[in-house]
Amino acid sequence: GAVVSQHPSRVICKSGTSVKIECRSLDFQATTMFWYRQFPKQSLMLMATSNEGSKATYEQGVEKDKFLINHASLTLSTLTVTSAHPEDSSFYICSAERGGGELFFGEGSRLTVL
Amino acid sequence: AQTVTQSQPEMSVQEAETVTLSCTYDTSESDYYLFWYKQPPSRQMILVIRQEAYKQQNATENRFSVNFQKAAKSFSLKISDSQLGDAAMYFCATSRLLTGTASKLTFGTGTRLQVTL
Image 1 (cartoon, rainbow over the protein chains, first blue to last red):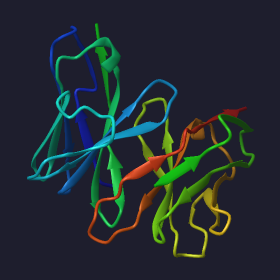
Image 2 (image 1 turned 120 degrees about the horizontal axis):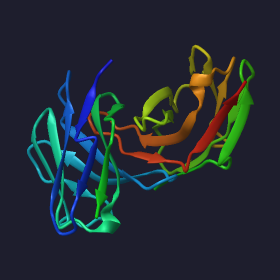
Image 3 (image 1 turned 180 degrees about the horizontal axis):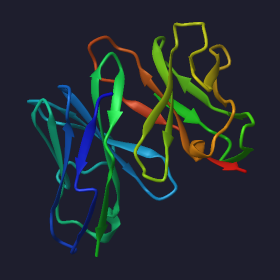
Image 4 (image 1 turned 60 degrees about the vertical axis):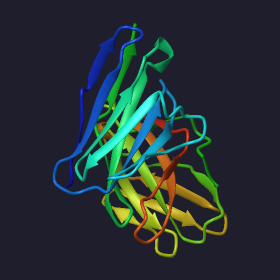
């Protein structure tokens, strides 16, 4: 099956620093990728839709200046958490669409901001 | 707008037995997909089963089957012959069905399934 890879799987950073998370579709091209956030014991909340070659579409309430998304190629989208604070600590998951509504998820990235 | 409701925060089943997880949804779309995803302790989301709303026949995947009641907006998951590896968080989800357009998923709050010996 298709594989979507996220990196890093775990990251710890100091408050005020920026962290970049990568999402790669390894064996298919994805014009659209999605970024989700999941708090402990809660559901996945869509943050934004990442479109190759154009600006990301953010969900209501998500700060676009804080969560920078870049989809520079058909196989890579990045999420940068800028000036991270402890409340940004969460599990971030990406997914990529291969087509026909078929979505594949990455392994997730756990961010801890000290 | 789409909403998904899972009313069972936790369920338990004995190994080899059958369990049914409930899901109801609401959508204004005429065409849509419904999904069940499994999230094991590793946290990676795994697709269990998918149903196109325009198909009347219930989807099945080996030990997993759904009971899709479109009029009632109900989409339950039945797991037969439960195995220890089935223990996970299960999320029901729905997305719009638009040709050539990416599908945004709306998830329910999840049901944690325990499998006991």
